[in-house]
Amino acid sequence: MIIINSIEELYYETKKAKGSIGFIPTMGALHEGHLSLIRQARKESELVVVSIFVNPTQFLEGEDLDSYPKKEKADRKICELAGVDILFMPTVEMMYGKDELRISAPAIRGFILEGTSRAGHFDGMLQIVMKLLNLIAYHQPKKFRAYFGKKDAQQLALITQMVKDYFINVEIVPCNIVRDGDGLALSSRNIYLSKEQRVHALSLSRSLKKATKMVIKKEFESSKIKEKMEKELTYIEVEYIALVNRQFVPIKHIELGNTIILVAGKVGKTRLIDNIWI
Ligand code: PAF
Image 1 (cartoon, helix red, strand yellow):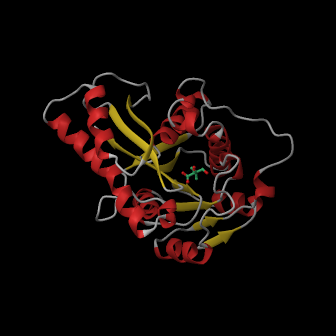
Image 2 (tube, rainbow, N blue to C red; image 1 turned 120 degrees about the vertical axis):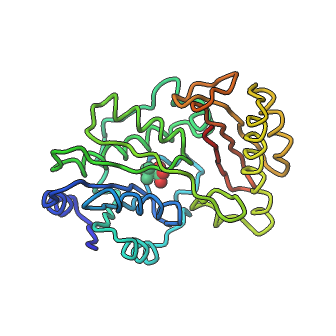
């Protein structure tokens, strides 16, 4: 595995690739969820590139930018063992200039749910993903693939839209959510949870399980499903429970094969999100 800290070196190494490139952008503190993306990329690509960059522009004032978990040594080892070819670790100075052109999230889909609770977050996220995709695509005449987890479902929907709207030559591959044995969706932020908070956090996935059971029993009304989920979410400071279609438009009735049920809330100071694709 080569560790790259400069854009020139990244260009040089990706230019040599003869086959397909699989790219996994991350903010580090890698866990089994990231590993599942890397494994899928490894199966499907000749060259696997992982980036680790804690992107300042997607954190809002008062969020955990400074305390965001950093595990550089462990991350390197994980990537090496998972068969990553290139680990790209840029600095803020390399990725951002002064008085930059900005990208804005779309006016409707970008400003509901996570876009309401974290206004501005998606602008910064799209900006860095656009930059990273362009860097990897620079010498890639063929289509390349980039892998994203379904846990950040709105992020995934907006990246997919950006790639389409801006004609970026990359295939976005959505990857399934990875959960711990107790059902908690894996997240780098789970390490903030105390033992007790972790138990409380389990009600997020439990509420989604309840929702799924209702759908299996043919309850398709969004309001009834939300009501049931809300009851399950004790000890969670719920930010939203939402049912949207895959285009991220809120729906009143479940559309089988085209629905995502989402929940976001705080356990103590830790903000967690989870969802299920129906
Ligand atoms: O999901 C993440 O870890 C980040 O939002 C991403 C896609 C790496 C952009 O910084």
